[in-house]
Image (cartoon, rainbow, N blue to C red; front, side):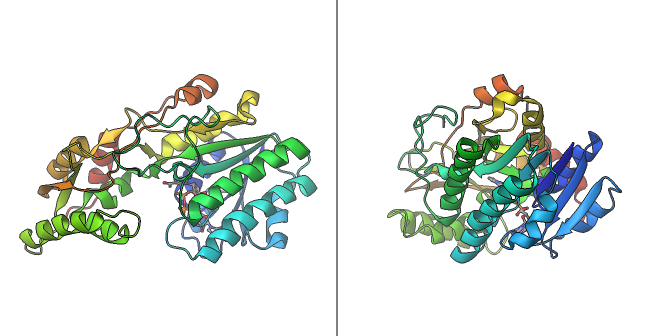
Length: 339
Ligand SMILES: NC(=O)c1ccc[n+]([C@@H]2O[C@H](COP(=O)([O-])OP(=O)(O)OC[C@H]3O[C@@H](n4cnc5c(N)ncnc54)[C@H](O)[C@@H]3O)[C@@H](O)[C@H]2O)c1
């Protein structure tokens, strides 16, 4: 098949392009010129054709889309971007890719849109009481806050509209924290300085966050300038809990919808092996592996506490995640050169 991957130089795009090449597909790889990962894709050889362009410029999108049998539209602004960048890259950009499919890829068999668990408001007092149910309409409301979440909700709706109107066979995936193994140990919530920065930024959303900031600042002072891991708990002592997934498992899930006609019109959650995982499981393990001490913090305010139901992803797609957070940490530590 001829497969377009937008955002091909990104964390998930790079792994996906490699897997597509390995499976014998021809890949059109679109990303901005500055993307660090594009150079590495060039080395994959003749099965990969590079397109350097911006999603917000239609004329740079259509040539990459032309004749595609499948599209993985991974390109997006995620993280530190302005509101205008979120809108133009994620909303205008998605519109451009869908329009280009209408005009230049009439035989398209799959259009994958990577949405996010950010479409759900996961940070509520006490944490989420039940696992997120992505495939049951309205079981968990898509009421996520912030511009990034808005662009993902709009993207999903655009995809459904193009399916209804033009028959473009769309599939949505909602990813949790998706990382290459090597990145996981640096996740901000495992580190005292990272969590402190985050809680400071949360002040407006969470009336009790100044009290949480005070707790973390005191622990930071006690650490006397040494970098420390932190095991975060809510005010009742319950450890923070999240869902993580290795980039390779994400790619497994993404590839499965290529050959599953029933995936059209559905939204799938993705999670790694043995998820969710708590700070109580991860932080002491990471501490042993890195040889960095950890402190415990009981934090007032809105905790991080959620889970997601991936049974439909298992049943419909046959998804079987292979990597848990401990394997990811082990790999990351093995890859880090000794100081
Ligand atoms: N990694 C996660 O935790 C996570 C979670 C939920 C959803 N997602 C979604 O998955 C997709 C891939 O995520 P990732 O982790 O690989 O992100 P990433 O930031 O590593 O990759 C995104 C890629 O998009 C490219 N891009 C950005 N703006 C562009 C533009 N204007 N034109 C063309 N290309 C542009 C970037 O250069 C980058 O290579 C994104 O849509 C993201 O929103 C990721």
